[in-house]
Image 1 (spheres, rainbow, N blue to C red):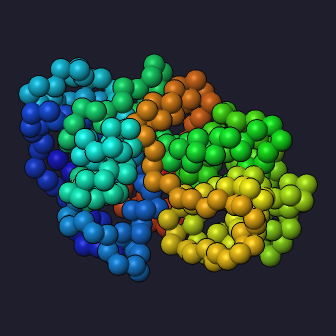
Image 2 (cartoon, rainbow, N blue to C red):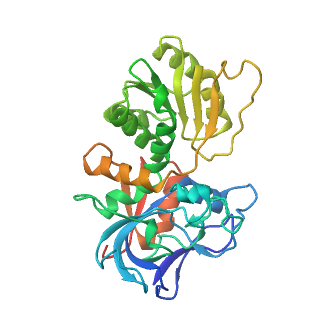
Amino acid sequence: MRALRLTTYHEEAELLEVDALDPAPGQVVIKVGAAGACHSDLHMMHGSAAPAPWPVPFTLGHETAGWVHAVGAGVQSVEIGLPVAVYGAWGCGTCGRCLLGMDSLCEDPLHRVGRGSGLGLDGGMAEYMLVPDRRYLIPLPEGLTPYEAAPLTDAGLTPFHAIRRSAAKLGPTSTALVIGIGGLGHAAVQILKATTAARVVAVDTKTQALELAVSLGADAVVLAGDDGVQEVRRATGGYGADVVLDCVGSTDTLALAAASARTMGDITLIGVAGGTLPFRFGQPAYEVSVQSVYWGSRSELVEVLELAARGLLAVQATAFPLERAIDAYRALAAGDVLGRAVVVPEGA
């Protein structure tokens, strides 16, 4: 079968022929319906930082959905042909965090935090994918296709988890600021509108992204630039935002986040651009909490998929066939993708 493999860090992945997959006891093979392309993959291919702590090669793709194709011995809870989404963070299954469904924060030394599907282990940019345990499969709600579901497993789940963490600060008199209306940010706008009563302000460097934010329900938009902080303050009545979701994570966006946060607010770093945030007394504003998130829980993914099935959340997606998967990443790197690039194997 064909798979997009990262063979060397800081070089483009390659579409290669690999062996067919045969599930061991407890494992499941899915026929891939779609796999999302993420900026974190670009950092592994084009980044200048030290390589990730995972040996290569491995197949990319940590946002995957498809249909159950084959099951190993002992797997009785899923049927062949069942449409499923893959929870991409794979942990030990027995530590305290995994028992909470937060395999993304697994504390077992043998399962390094962050390792999972397409991140050190073979992911979904292939015709078929081996899932190590049935617990990582979430049956799709009625009416939701693998193409619609795949990017939700990260681009939907991660902002959902961030918003859930700050739920107490997102009431009717609150404002949420979303910085970066890309794959994560445009989902964050929809989740905020669907699950909270807060006003939503969107910031981006591109007018097309801001137009998308407005179409998804943003109450106000700000074009990033020299006057960005003043415009955010104006949009929030001078107070600043109660919750700031930085879906980029550069030094510039973190500076905007810090200057835009209201006292007692939250700044949540979602994007992985590698920026840093200066921290000193009085900056950010007093009693502002700064936090980062990494994916979310399996139960939260169930909720995300349900939001999508009810028409309250949809990823703006551009499809690429598997043979052009590397073109999806090139388009993403060039800033030519509005929303998410999604790779679809032939026949899926």
